[in-house]
Length: 231
Image (cartoon, rainbow, N blue to C red; front, top):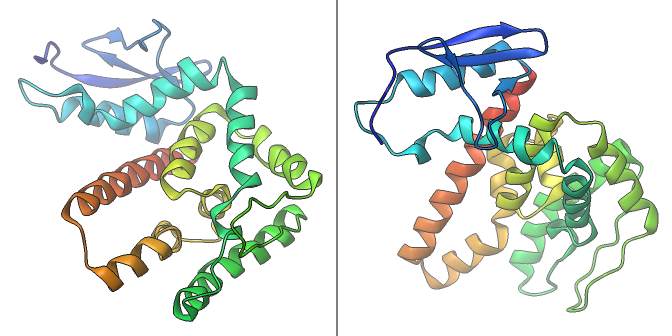
């Protein structure tokens, strides 16, 4: 695409902060006004647009994409998004372990047990951990309490969390980052325990490494959006 504006500026609104291109308010793909809850997020979105050259790929407008998702998808489908995220908790990565090799089992325990303990204290949930091949059914209150932990969150938080959870493969790791229990880097490391073990045993795969780098970049962008939306 070609750049068609000279300047992007933040405009305060009654219900948040909009971004205008040469005085014209930006709109989402669904033609809604792009309004975000916090000025730092709006300023970062404006900065994305100001930093573009004469020609650009819209895919680089990552914060704008997350804002569009929050406004066009989460706003209309909050219940569905909350249920989808809650579903991750029913089969969470941190609950599925190996018995052998012992080195991997120990690494899983070291990375994942603290998250399970944190979730027990934070949400009053008692997660079952398995080393079997069959899925483990979690107690009914696990879904109820995780749902409650998600339902109060603003649309922007849910948009960011949806991507974070997808990239980490774990609702608990995503919530641990969102609530400050884990750093993003520690959560990423915890999410890659199995893959890192395989790479150490059999060597790295260039295609897998490229996919992993793309996933981490998406995770970092979602986390940045989450932080700015709460600033």
